[in-house]
Amino acid sequence: MAVSCCAAIDYGDLMNDFYELPLRVQTYDIDFAGIVSNIVFIRWLEDLRLGLMDEAYPLVQALADDIAPILTTTRIAYRRPVTIADRLLGRMRVAGLGRVRWRLAAEFIVGGAVHADAEQEGLFMRLSTRRPIAIPEPIRRHHAT
Image (cartoon, rainbow, N blue to C red; front, side):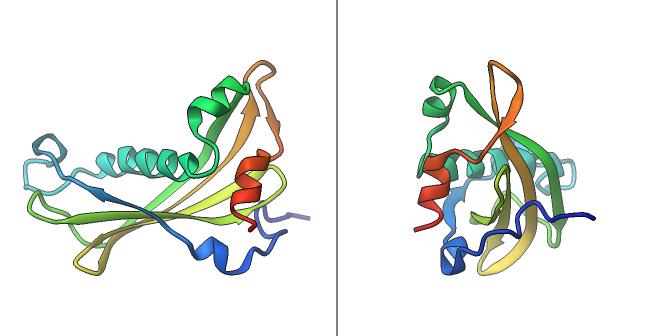
């Protein structure tokens, strides 16, 4: 029987709270057609995820605690092109927390329209053992209250 990694806990409205970050399109982000390259969205997801973590459990603290976030899945749907002239807003929220895994949802918005959306799944591991651990308490607490 398959069990969803993140469906076990219902946190209600809190998982609708987005971390938001204005994103600047650089000249090196665009391809020959003047559109942001797909790979740039991966970098932006990393920026969003680290910003989201900073609110509850900054990466520097996690590493000092012998803990690292690990991605297991990234899915992106590119809906509309993003160009260098666009004012882009990235948004990410915790979409689900299981005992060990978490699921994140992100949107890339220009002028109120979603140009891409993404979902990432991951876990945390103890660096010294390379073994998965339960979601760190600061993250669980921050997204449960």
